[in-house]
Image (cartoon, rainbow, N blue to C red; front, side, top):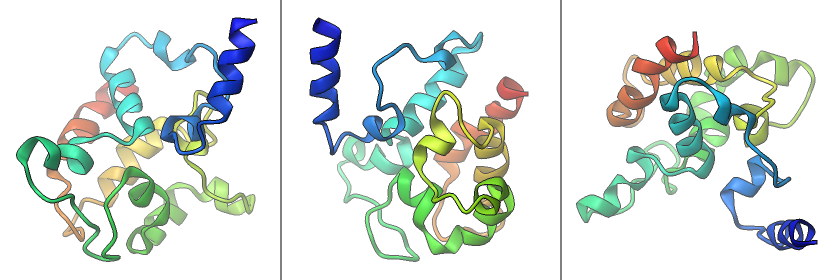
Length: 153
């Protein structure tokens, strides 16, 4: 069937950021949310394209890097990898750590996340931006945190 062939092709996409969050081709349950903003935020985080990580392309600047780790800045790095935010991860994603489950984007951004999207958007991202983060998250946080509390509550 066409769907099976499409799934097989999708499974070969090993460098696709979205495949890590959505390995099976099917409808996004989160797309049924009443607030379009909610889905826009999820989509941008899932594909890793935010003003913070990709705005340099529009501004003609060099790609941003993590000032703590000196590697290219990415959503994956911010949410899961950067040691600067280990303490916040352990506090907000305690359920994952208690179960000794390795952190993975699907646990945070899939349709059935282990950690609520409210925790990821409103709590974790807000905490890592105040006070004095390693880099300026303002454009990222204004988009995600400011409105997400209203949308996700």
